[in-house]
Picture 1 (tube, helix red, strand yellow):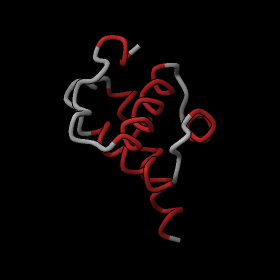
Picture 2 (tube, one colour):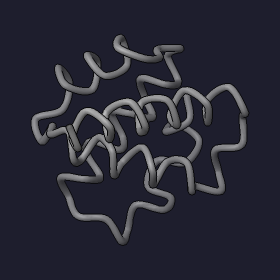
Picture 3 (spheres, one colour):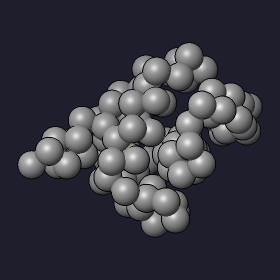
Length: 89
């Protein structure tokens, strides 16, 4: 959904692995996933998965000017905060 409209917008400054995690994250959010379902989707569909990359990709998605839907931003924010706290613990 989101990636179909803007396939490579805003990803030119990210590394290849972070870009892959970012794209999988945005695709999962576009499918309506959130919380643990979104986290599981990213972990299963990204070969470059790590907790740190999920957190960084979520923070980059929050700052992406092309993502404007409040519900999508809240789902991304939730995954970023939940798994950032988990990484820190």
